[in-house]
Amino acid sequence: FSTVFLCFFFFLEDNKCYGFTDLNFGNVLVGTKLNVKLLLYTREKEDCGFLLDLEKSTINVTKKTIFIIHGYRPTGSYPVWLDKLAQLLLSKEDMNVIIVDWNEGAATLLYPLAASNTKKVAVKLKDFLDKNVVGHGSLDSVYMIGVSLGAHIAGFVGQMFNGSIGRITGVDPAGPLFKNKPKDERLDSSDAQFVDVIHTDTNGLGSEEPMGHIDFYSNGGKNQPGCPDHVFAGKEYFVCDHRRAIFLFINSLKNPQCNISAYPCTSYKDFQHGNCYSCEDFFPKGCPVLGYHADEWKSSLKSKPYKNLYFHTTNKEPFCVQYYILDIITWNKRPRWGDIMIKLTNASGSITESKMNRVAKEFQKYKEVHLLAKFQHDFEKISRISLKFSTGNVFGPKYKLRIIRMRLRPLTKPERSHLCRYDLILEENTEVEFRPITCKDLEM
Image (cartoon, rainbow, N blue to C red):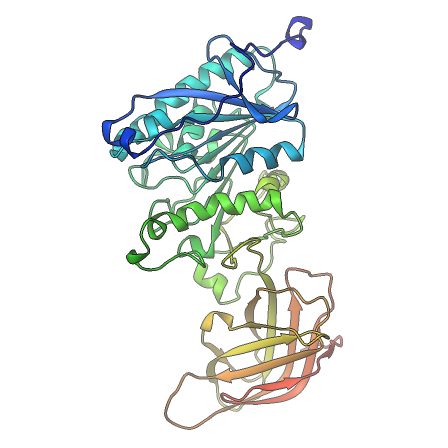
């Protein structure tokens, strides 16, 4: 950097603190003309937004610079997640956090109008970066977090710099008017050195198609736990799934002890069936973690192809699910079809339950079957396990599942011991409780 550039200062019209543009539904009805404002937050004044002049202001690009770009605002309301995200980012490291406020232009009843403004916003951001970074610093330190339409804005900026921006996170990129578009008309993995995407509403306001180097599909990408499933819930019915993506990202900053790992798989159905629980073939350092730290897996993508990543969540913060794999070897003479419910009990008597997604599996003699079990609570020490086998038949004979070996493997915490039980008989619809033992090394 030149001496002059190191002495860059923030050019401010005054010392006032500025906030996000305050609009209401009346403004939306009248209509708003596009106006882009950049609000800078730093550790020096975390609660005070400095209004940057797009033509004159300069920033210290020796710091990491994160742009937060919101999406469509059909009521003109203030994004409820915006302040929390900016504060959590600043708590991570000394950086520039710039909120891209284009509420005037996003607040309209006409979604196509807001969508058409995305490229115009991108041009203004490109001009700002040209003045501040190009020729003075590196685009490696520029990171854009784009929510809904904001994800495509980030993509358009990245395209203008031929993908040299350090990172883009697409937070449930908008689907309407962007689905099945060529990559230069939407966010794409070529728009930055690393692009990670979170999908939570693929059958609604989001987009299903992969757009990043890594694409995270929460609960398959749709129908998030805790979100209403009927239109009578009002606004929440339409926005809850879509908005869950930003809350998942915020959770990665707010609750670092809850690292949500995701697993590469050909489809969500295969993932539910327990067919995908290993990351070694694609990610030598382990399964990628959703959110802010996802870029730590960037180096894994250079030499090997990647797949879409799937994971489950609970219905509320911190959203963590504890995964186990239940391996079962049976010795019934004839195949049995059914599913298994499992309960775990710790020393204090607390219980957590999983129902294996109610996916029927075929149990054949001497053939090991893998079942994916998920729990809301994490028990470091398990004192008892309960299993219940069911075929789903209301009428007819009751069957038995004769088990040679049951093994419970912690997937979320792989360093923990595997738990086993040998020679077990499950009568249909009858819960069997037992005390597990640490598994022996057996060859089956």
